[in-house]
Image 1: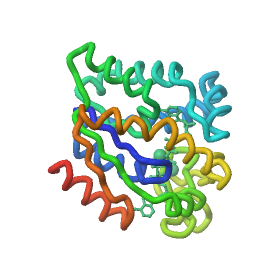
Image 2: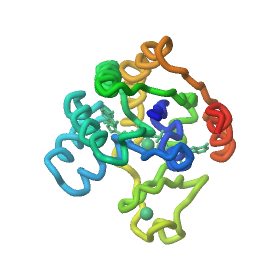
Image 3: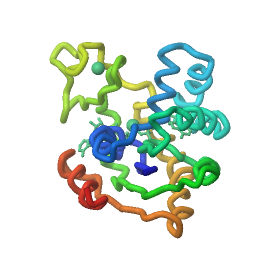
Image 4: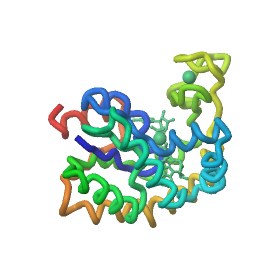
Length: 214
Ligand code: AP5
Ligand code: MG
Ligand code: ZN
C-alpha cells in the first residue's frame, strides 16, 4: 500500500499524516522531516539540504531519490509507505514509479489536499515546530505550552527558518512549477482523491478517511 499525500506547502500534509499512516498500517515518510533531522545533526546531507530549503527551493532530485531509496530499503517499508512531500518533481515521480515497479509494486492512490494560497500564508507564517519531536503548532489556532515548549515532549518550539512570508512565496512558486505537474502525470495511472483541505483538522481527516473508504 504505497499512498501519496500531496498538496502545496501548508496544506496540512504533516498534520494529517500520523493518523492516516497509523490507519493504513504503514510508516510515514516525509522527506522534509528527514532533511530537517540531518540539519539538526549537522550531517553533510543536512548542510547541503539547508542551502536549498532556506531559499524555498527543492533539494536536487538525485540527492532526494537516493535518500528515499535508502528509506524504502528498510524492513518496515517493504509493504507500503505513506509519502508526505515526495515525489515533488516529475523526475522524482518517475524515479519512484520505476523503483517500485522493479519489484512488482505500484502506487495505490493519491490524496490531494487543496487549500488556497491566501489560507496557506496564514497557516505557515503562524506555524511553530518542535525542535525535538517535530510536532506542529500554530501561534494562534493551536498554540504550544504557555512557556513556548512542546506539549508532547517539553522541548523548545520555534519557527522554521523557511516559514517566513518571503520564503513561503518561493515555495509556492516551486510547488506550482515543479510539483503540481506530477498530478497531470498521475491522472491516467493512479486514483486521485481531491480533498478540500479547508476546515477543522478533524473535519479534513474525516474527508480523507471517507475518500479512502477507511
Ligand atoms: P516540507 O517539510 O515537505 O514542507 P512543505 O511541503 O512546504 O510542506 P509543509 O511541511 O510546509 O506543510 P504541510 O502540508 O506539512 O502542512 P502542516 O501540516 O505543517 O519541505 C520543506 C523543504 O524541504 C522544501 O521546501 C524543500 O527545500 C525540501 N524538500 C522536502 N521534500 C523534498 C523533495 N521531495 N524534493 C526536494 N526537496 C524537498 O500545516 C501547516 C500549518 O497549518 C500548521 O501550523 C498546522 O497547525 C496548520 N493546519 C494544518 N491543518 C489545518 C487545518 N485544517 N485548519 C487550520 N490550520 C491547520
Ligand atoms: Mg510538512
Ligand atoms: Zn516535541
